[in-house]
Length: 346
Image 1 (tube, rainbow, N blue to C red):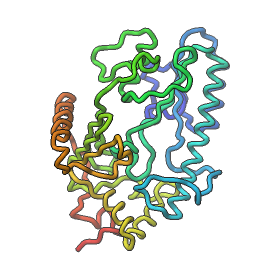
Image 2 (cartoon, one colour; image 1 turned 60 degrees about the horizontal axis):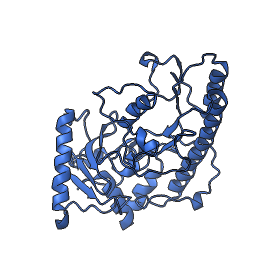
Image 3 (cartoon, one colour; image 1 turned 90 degrees about the vertical axis):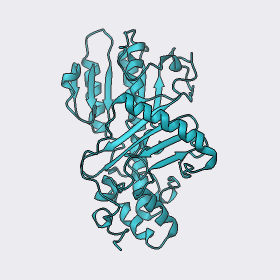
Image 4 (cartoon, one colour; image 1 turned 135 degrees about the horizontal axis):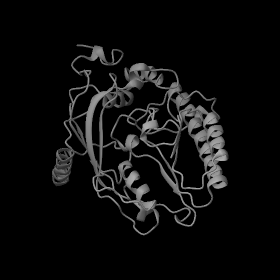
């Protein structure tokens, strides 16, 4: 096995069974190092190659080819000049990543032959409001693109629900290994090969925290049609690095959002929803893909709420989830601690 770039979030993975490790994450350096490794490789045996990139992680510093005036963004974002500048820079990083993926695929074909399974994915959604550090689909639904000449039908698309925990057993299965019984995930190899059209009925996702700037534990369960989110501590203010740091090309647009929210009702609603969450949220994701309409209190949804609550509670118990709060939170009752420009103390 060989690892290049940002694998395991940049931690040293030398002790995880890799025969070769190089942590350089910039795209230009990654391409050169992977090329050199493949060109110098003499052994004729199977290879598991991990390549992790920093694109499109903040900060988005590349000179963009996108016109800020023409970019699109989700309905729960606020249209400001800085937002458009950030979005254009973010798109550029995705564009450059796409080109790099093409380079990697070409290299694998040149040096590893045709029997190569390529998997492209991401660990979470982008660092935008309601994305990373959230359990909305914008933060948890990630790309999963695969290619395997002669095995996976070109251009095929699947609606099967799979989870990241399913990747390891899938790779073991495809490699003709024995999948351990104690793994949480299960192989979706038959979906890739076109032998099955479904995989999971339920997907569970979690968020607890990230350092001392992102303390907001939540849990969720999703079906093909519904998503139930449990915000464990609705008395906490939902904050993260973006709105607290507001660094250029990472979250600086938040200053404009806060100013706009003082006089614009739509902006006020978006910013308010970002910082303050109810304990329970229910979305009919089959039609409400941006999860804009919380129907938890809908009389017609009593049964689906009860069913999903039980599924989530059972999973929390089975996994031994202690629902720990790992650091001191920012409280809604103390607004001056977390967002002084918008929520002023009475």
